[in-house]
Image (cartoon, rainbow, N blue to C red; front, side, top):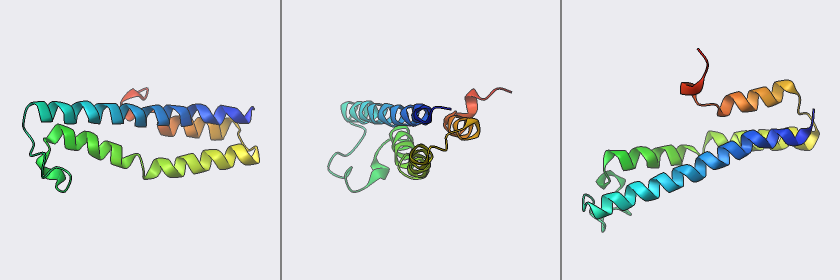
Amino acid sequence: MKPHLIFWPVLAQVLLTITLYILLGRARGGARKDKSVDIKRAPYDPSVWPVKVRQVGNSLDSQFQAPVLFYALCFVCWATGNVGAFELSAATRSRWPAWCSPR
């Protein structure tokens, strides 16, 4: 199997992170327009943001925890040339959202 195929799930993860940044920007911009947040307290107290903004922010925060291990493992598989059907399947399955899983 071609080792470079391991980077497709990595690309999907990177696109998810970029999408979350865009969603967070839109959510925070909407909250600022609605004047539903105290701008002076926002940098120091995340609880001033509406619930929807905090949910997107928490999702973005989690992208810098377990996915970092995912990136490292994908790089190690690629660097050592150990990209087989199992590794590719595991990488793809780990990035597949639970709500998209076949029943």
